[in-house]
Image 1 (cartoon, rainbow, N blue to C red):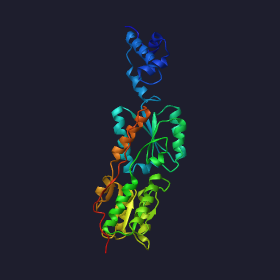
Image 2: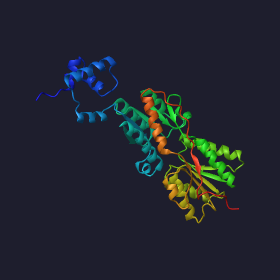
Image 3: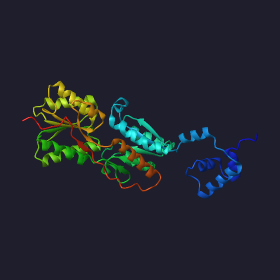
Image 4: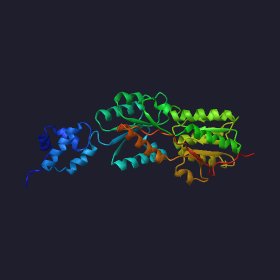
Length: 342
């Protein structure tokens, strides 16, 4: 039996290094087209057969089709958030089409996130990354640009700066639709249980709520910040309902907090929607399982994740991403919203 032909044999025949052979035979950048053709011809002449185990490992090697996602949230909280579960599922659905991989890391803050990106890029663990939870003047954006790391921002273009491609949903239009709907039902006192005020999309929603309420002649709306958890959502709801100027409608920045708010209303003996209307954001299955079912600002989070991943590979492969038109969450009225009590 003849000895197995190795990459070193192919390298010797083509007059190149073993590393160049590996790049060429795995369709990786780093060698010129003529050199790639010469290497493949040498491999064919020698009857080289790829080692399947080695090829499987190569898929996991630095620089393979792996994209990164770093989220600054506690692990226990992330597991309870339907948004991120759907978003990651959408990313994975596109990666499956490419036999690519998602590298997910949870960190405590953005400084640690930047350090993770730096390590990933220098060690070629990823081909690019997705930035989420953008803030105004987000330090991760210039950091990614300084590294030269391909990145896509899941957020408003105004937050992504001039260096990153953004894939976004129109939070402002969605908030306006929700406020106009509640005003049409007769609500004058609308409050909001929001997220982290440092986040760009939280600030956009807050500004729009205040602007539209003013345009419609409603009472100045009150927004309470939270960490997006059910516990914080319940606490904020109790504060609003215990105030002298109790709202007749509350908007929530995610579905978990809206479910918690519904429970608080029952705890205080309030009827939903007769005494209080509630509207959630994201519209996961949770919203349809409550009693009454929650009205919600609904959008395709799974499709959003897939679009983000697709756009990132356009950036990685130096294709011009298609112009990203924002998707706007659509109000789905259900049993938790109605006219205020006379």
